[in-house]
Image (cartoon, rainbow, N blue to C red; front, side, top):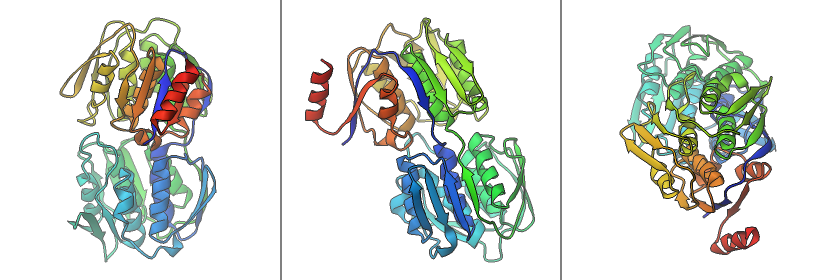
Amino acid sequence: MDQYIIKGGNPLVGEVEIGGAKNAALAILAAAIMTDDTVRLENLPDVNDINVLLEAIGGIGAKVERVDRHTAVINGSTIGDISVDYEYIKKIRASYYLLGALLGKYKKAEVPLPGGCNIGSRPIDLHLKGFRALGATVDIKYGAIVASAPNGLHGTHIFMDTVSVGATINIMMAASMAKGNTIIENAAKEPHVVDTANFLNSMGANIKGAGTDVIRIRGVETLHSTTYSIVPDMIEAGTYMFAAAATRGDILIKNVIPKHLEAITAKLEEIGCEVEEFDDAVRVISAKKLRRTHVKTLPYPGYPTDMQPQIAVTLALATGTSIVTESIFENRFKYADELTRMGASVKVEGNTAIIDGVEKLTGARVSAPDLRAGAALVIAGLAAEGITIVDDIVYIQRGYEDFEGKLRSLGAEIERVTSEKEIQKFKLRIG
């Protein structure tokens, strides 16, 4: 089992390049099969989730060619099966996007109920409600969602009960090939919703209003080929921003859209970091003692839930008492016990963590409970005194490309190891 071994205490300094957004790429990969023409996708992150979804798309008969590490060419004209294999779905939750894509194109789809990170229930009922409103019959049979619209999908007015990125994207995909006009109200506004809409429009869809809470879609009969580059990953960027803060470093984070990072930037400045913005880069300098703050996760443009563990780790080293409130997922504080093993003072009550800042963290053996919490524990290890070992890094590899390589380029002492022997070798080498 792969692990990270880290010797903490070095400020991270230097430049790091951010890859394509995993969450946008997953939706766009699913949407790419909605045309029978060839689609070329660039700036794909080389992470496990993307590779699994590419396999799933190949598994239903599409032609998938990896041109290079960050480019794939997909042709959906050879799809012979609208039933996706459970083996792929249990690994990544976002494979449910194949529902909207297949239903839009073929008017039928069969996708097993999804897996992914265990950070709380992420109900699929909003997706199903949207498909039903578009005229599909939707059932759950034998552990799979089975949707069909033999008479075709028709445009409609859909009001989302709660803001849901996944449901907004799934309904948008299906509606883009429905007859007539669809209006989605209370739609999610996240950058990856906008990126998916832009991608669909580049294939000939007619979607307006993505990025606002009302999306208007005029259905089209067919979509055509396109070449499209995925938007930069704001969560990967934010993770390095907090790595700079927690380790008292100075990092220039390149290939980002600073506008997407505003909620993160605001909190970093609040706790005492200096943030410089450029056209496509941000620089985070952490030279002063960090201060306490309060943060509550909210749908975009609020503070992102995917950045909640990273700020909590940083606040564990700030002066005073901070409160972190999680309003999106109910099970997102599972890293708190691991952080406590490193000397942090974290008390979780319901959906709130009360964090009393400590002078320093000390290395320990910890386990990554999910993707973002795993990355946050790596940041904790980099900021801590001594040696930290992070288990279950398969979660981290789902969403961060070459995490240890990029961190090493910033001066981190971190290695991916697979045995006790390699751990001992690392300890001897760094003395």
